[in-house]
Amino acid sequence: MKVLLFNGSPHKSGCTYTALEEIAKTLKEEGIESEIYHIGTTAPIYPCRGCYACAKIGKCVINDDDVNNFVEKCKDFDGFVFGSPVHYGSADGGITAFLDRAFFSSFRSGRGNIFSHKPAAAIVSARRAGTTAALDQLNKYMTISQMPIISGRYWNMVHGATPDEVKQDLEGMQNMRILARNMAWFLKLKEAGQNAGIEIPKQEETIFTNFIRG
Figure 1 (tube, one colour):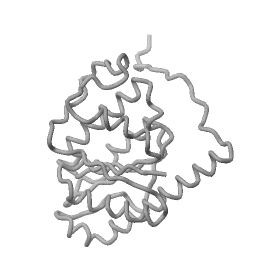
Figure 2 (cartoon, rainbow, N blue to C red):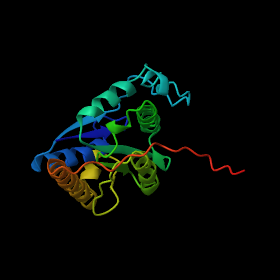
Figure 3 (tube, one colour):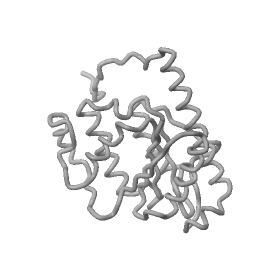
Figure 4 (spheres, helix red, strand yellow):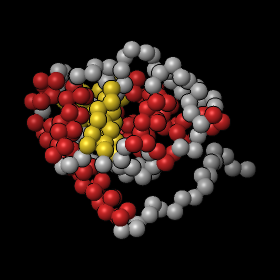
């Protein structure tokens, strides 16, 4: 079993990475593999155009960044943790543009099962405030994708302006470890259920409405 830890920060080894690293360390102790994926800063990340071309060609029409490669990579993972710094009281602009297209294109192209029914969690890092708003924002990617959300013992956040300060946030770092153990526990339960013949819930054809009534 493998968990992909998504570092949505422009800083490869910053505060968000410090929290993800603590999760990776604990997952390893629980016998779960993990990999940290950094969103990178070498190329611009374009926002979703709302062109719906992904429904026709099976992937996002924008090929100038790593979104399509990331979606393909996700096939090989059993769980996810999406990490972001808090910028202006919300998730980082890069991770927002990236995940908008990753989730939208995988769903519209019929590849929604890449994410659906796989456990996931969001974590955020902040110097001071905006954490719960950013968490709410990130959790929406999961709830629209039928992904069980893994929690810790508190909201999944760490505080600090530097990696060293994050390490001093003892409660926040503890919660990263609790989150990791809960993720490992859920993955093991899911595997045991699958081995026992328990299948995913019955899926219905999606109904779209715009709430306009005649």
